[in-house]
Image (tube, rainbow, N blue to C red; front, side):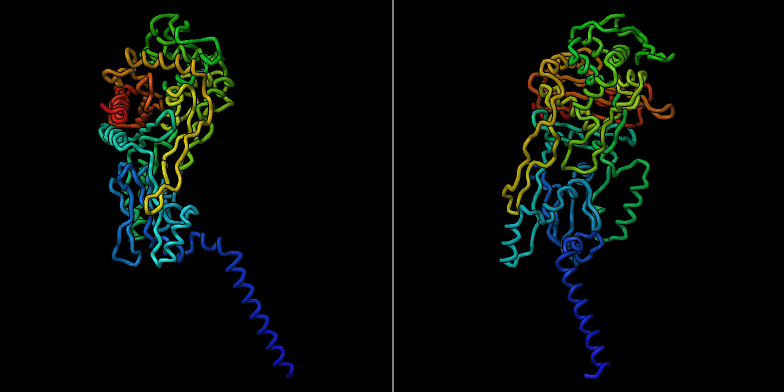
Length: 486
């Protein structure tokens, strides 16, 4: 063989070996990363063309896939889109949100728990199907939460969360304004991209689940945390005498804070129960100032502040109680102002912990994971994540909150024949926008089945009429009644 032919032969051999090495590298080393690459249209198209599992509330499929007449074979549909969108999220060609995202492996059929199902489908030459996800949601409670938000005046912004105190099950989670996930499931991808841009640029932020994605000053609902810290210190109980009066001068400052109504809360010295009933700012400013930043922060963190706990639904914002506040800020934190911020979920967890003898349960929205034949593959077990207070402290707080519903600021949550525990909150914002209205409650007080938090971020309500009891109380009452029943 002459030299030119030999050189060409060696060169071809090198090229062949290079191709072999590259093919081996792509097929065995990078196979997983390439298949999971969001730019891999072949994988995306295959997954998008598969019959995706259903998202269930009770026996109703609130999200499911139905046959379509195009190359993608199936169309994702949502039966009650606006009511459940903050929970389900949407399933689009290039992205998912909410449960559609957090439970994507189950719904798409790729979860390891569905291995046997996939094997049977392969052997029987049947198209693979995704698994089903059963939510913890109580349909009646969700209806009540959604109706309450829809009935707020004007183009309102707000959220409702209801928890089962003993387990952490999310019984309701509603947010407004919201969106129609059916529009994102469209096979017209140009229209979907335009919709995504429009909604992301909408100043009302309809894509945000305000129940877990919006943090705002919790106002007087945070007085539950302040009261818990005070009682846990060993120096107070529901009958202890505490400072009242009409004003409190912030420490190291010339600023004076008054009560919301300008009154004196019933006297210079009042009981802690009376302070809670009338939502006395002076009392809780004084208590937070006395307790100090460390004790207040420790108590807030026991309830879940400065961390996240909801693991099966994406997009949770962290509720904050900063540990670097100065004395005036710490005092203001006692009434849920200063740098303190909370999600509605967090404030529902506060109420639920009091209802549950001080135990904070991890909230969860996925009850069961089921195979396509509806056999149960996995079930979420309730989990205690912290002890926020002793059962004695929880009992003292419950007595105070029952009194607040019976003859205090939280009377709109009264349910005939039941003892209800509740607290209002009205958090100040900037001068150019109205306050935020909050309400937290649980019932029945002696055997709690549901804890609720309501946030009304904005509505077309006259500024002078914005109050947690007026706006949030009726919504919380309706949700509690829906869970407890007649």
